[in-house]
Amino acid sequence: MALKIQKSYNEEEQLWVLELEGEVDLHTAGNLKEAVTDMLEEKISSIRVIGDRLEYIDSTGLSVFIGAIKKLQAKNHHIIVTNLKPSIKKLLNITGLDKIIVVEN
Amino acid sequence: MNEGINRELIELSIPHRSEYIGMIRLTVASIASRMGFDIEDIEDMKVAISEACANAIRHGGCSEEENFIVQFIREQNRLEISVSDFGKGYSVNTLQTPNTQELNEGGLGIFIIKSLMDDVKIKSGNSQGTSITMIKNLREEA
Image (cartoon, rainbow over all chains, first blue to last red):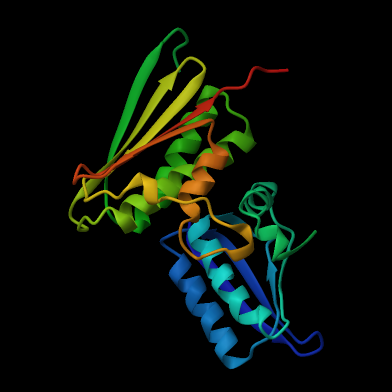
């Protein structure tokens, strides 16, 4: 399965909304990295990742967020992820990423 | 699948290209599901095998024309998965447990595999390629 990425800036909440549909692995992580890099080049701001339709992510995808967090934390911005599948939450937990990424239901 | 089979080998030879990793995830899910693993264990194995394949593709040092081997050894109560490349290999001793306070973009893969699987062995180095063998035990039904 491929990865569909939709990004938009929510002026009201002043954050990026990133909707991911499909699978993030070595094959698709490059597209995610490009999208996130473009977003943060346009505007450094918090990112809310909508995870309802994210079926799969592994370390290659998580690395993209780790890279982004470094840029965001310096300006007191965050990454928020919502509605993740249990298996993806587990991955954030074992890697300790849930300590630096805000996980919402 | 036939009951009473003690040990069966399923082997795939895969080009060093990332587009095939999704197919390998489907394969492991299919094998593990037939063996009776639950959804959580199947998801663990999908992530672990993807990490091992990503490792082979990125760090194996092989060209896209060369293949790496994925073996599934199905036993009565466990599934053993091996991902082997024929590249340069690397020193297993240099692998470190990532510090969660200072996460780096690399180095997470092996840590994730070790966290998700019941037993993991890594053989690498001396131009012998790298082989990651990982085992998931079938849990007794409560």
